[in-house]
Image (cartoon, rainbow, N blue to C red; front, side, top):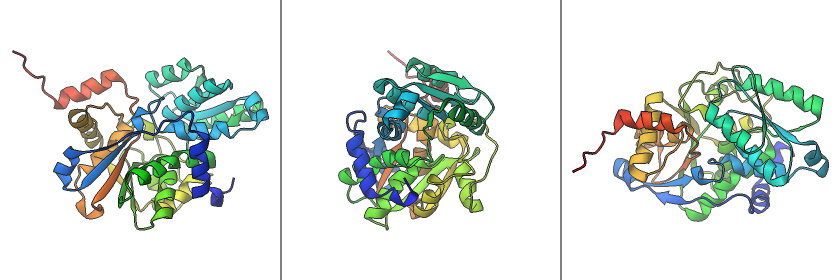
Length: 331
């Protein structure tokens, strides 16, 4: 598939293709954010997918589009966690061999989730780019089909189905806030938004710590950056110097990429728990973190925010909560 083929039609086809594996996720109004911003905000809860993140959509669309020969050989992926988890889950449903390449930076709880779904996990190197190099060698040596976490037209179309659900639920949307890493999520949803109404503003959000797409857009081409530890660990990783799909789509359809600090990411995690009773990971919290910065002139009056995933180590989660939330005294 060519870049020009990632059309609204292809995204509708993806919606039909993945229907049996992917649930439409709830959209909930946030009274707490209305109280802060004075604007209507609807949150899209992709943390409620079967594998805990939006990545299931793209993985399902990509694997369900494989030929019989590709299924027989098997698939592999490189990942910072959620993509690998999604590919492993779909591969198990379809009876396909699955290999996931990770860097040593990926937390143990994410590794365990992939192994639980039957994937063969290989951990090497200190970055997603290192894991990618390992995956490239396996792709050649074992003739496995690579499922990219973001730079794949079927993956992007799968993520774009979120945009269809948002428009159906919220036809008056004028602002979308979406986490950005390799850009597959932002590219797919922004394609839907801008095709239906070019005036809809798409605001991407990433972490200050090693935001690869942000620096690539600034440079006017994909660039390499050094990975660093972050609460938003699912947003880590490069976008690939040979990026063919997600980078040009983000460049074309996303109006701006904003950054949030580690402390602001913590505050987004706490806000989601205190006001909505949900545990989200740092990569999802950046949406709330940016909204809480109250940059009102950048927003319209009808805002949708993507909460992209909820796969977070529970010990880390409670440690963050303990910094901001005092235990209630009981009588």
